[in-house]
Every structure is written in C-alpha cells, then in structure tokens.
Image (cartoon, rainbow, N blue to C red):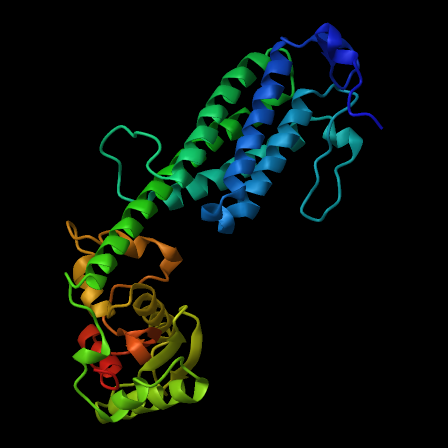
Length: 358
C-alpha cells in the first residue's frame, strides 16, 4: 500500500466528512500545530532525563491525538470516549459534547494537580527565564512554545469546529504544565551541578573527604577495609553491632545497609521502633551512598546560600539531609555502600551509624 495518495497535490485535503478544504484552512493549520506539538513531546519522552515520565508524556500524546480527532470530526463521525473499564461510550452518547467535555475536564484537573505539586517543590522564580539552562528544560520549553502556538491556532479553528472547544482548556493548561516541568528540570540541573562541583572539590583535596583514613576504631574497620563489595553476611554483621550499641542506649532504632548503588542489602527493625523510622533509615542510606558523605554533614550544606540548597526537594523524598546516614568505603577507599539509622536524634543516629566505621 502506497503512503501517498496525490489527493493533496492541488493544495486541498479532506476531513472526516470527506469534503475537500484548502490546506490553509484554520482547522488544517490547527491540526498541523497539534501534530508538531505531539512530535516535540516525543522528543521530550525519548530523553534519558525524562525516562521516569515517559508514560506520563505518552498519555498526553494520546490526548492530543484525541483532540485532533475531535477537530476533524463531524456529527456523523466522532471519536468515541474510552472509559477506564476499556469500554467505549455508545455512538449516541459520544455525539454529545458532555461526554468529551467531562473527559477533558478530568484530564485538565490532573494537569493542574501536577502543576501545583511541581511548583511547590521548587523555589519561586524571581526573574524572567532564559531558556536553555540544560538539555532537559530546553526541549520542554520548545514543546511549551509549540503548545502556545497550537492553542492560538485552535481558538481560530474553534470557530469552524463545534467540538474542539471541549479540549481548549486542556491545551491551555498543558503549556503551563510543560513550563513548570521545564523549571523543575532547570532546578534539578542547578542543584545536581552544585553536588558534582562539591564532590569534585573533595576529590581534588579541596574539601574533607570521608575515607578510611579518618576512622578511629580498628576492630571492624580493618575488616571493612578489605571489602570489595558488601555481602549480606557482612551487612548483617554491621547492623547487629549498631543494634547492640543502640540497646546500650535504650534506643529502639531501624537500621539499613545498602550497596554502592543505593539499593538495600539488609534492614533490621528493632522492637518498638517508630513506623516512620524504616523509610527514614532507607533514605539516609541512599543519600549517604549517592553523595559519598554523612547526612549529618549534608544537613549543613542544604541551608540557604549553601551549595546543596534545595537538594532535598529532588528524588521524590529519597534524599534526606538528616544525620544518620554514613557511607562505607572499602578497599582502595572505594565506595561500597552506606548505612542508615533512624530512631533517635540526628546526632544519636549519626553516632550509631558511625560507631562501626569511624
């Protein structure tokens, strides 16, 4: 089957009703703008920086294609609403604006919730934005600009199509969504660049580095120094020693040991420890492994004006700047994992986590 039909060679095309219209018709221009927007969202979705949000952007692309179907529809040929059950609305019902109106109103509400959540996670902007701070935000800002143009085209096309009006608020909110996502990408890039700069300074000897040389206790220290990687047995040995120290303090805690990638190896929950301690200990271990420093030291670096300010807003709650997380360095001072402790004060948790290492 050939992909070309030659029907449009004369400068006209057809919508669902089959009636030829010029390609500069407002509806055709709006369809082209939506198609371009969809292509830009495909670029956004394909970037490594947005891998976790690929499904989210894919859903938005499907909504845009639905809007394109509505834009080119007639009363006889309209796309049907597919409900969460997988079933489609009846043809009669799909011929009413109410069904699609409810659908796009719900999708607009979802975008608004995501906009509010993202905006609350970043500092407010105090100046106009210059685009291109990082690749992730650059593609989002470009998609947003196309979304704005598509909305402009749709307002004119709405005068020719009685159905597209139900999708106008969604397209309008979509540009806001892409804007705030771009600002979050800028924020994340800025903070993580500061993290890399600080870690590079530590590697260069300009800042203190938490290495085996700074440890004082030789008992477990000598054994840990020979580790190439943490095994389950080794992790359990470390956690059991920490628990013994916590019992002497009459402090019920939760302890977690993770590998160099921040993935948990073992977790111990003492009787009567707080429910929240498990998640906190997990986050402390992940943070210490990710940044190769104790979380107690990190707590000072996330204050306003410091290089890691805003870091705790990233990672969906996995970064926690509260004492109790300590990195583990093994053979040749290479990071092999981290320990997270939660249940006491930040200082107590740090003391317990450090007791088997430093």
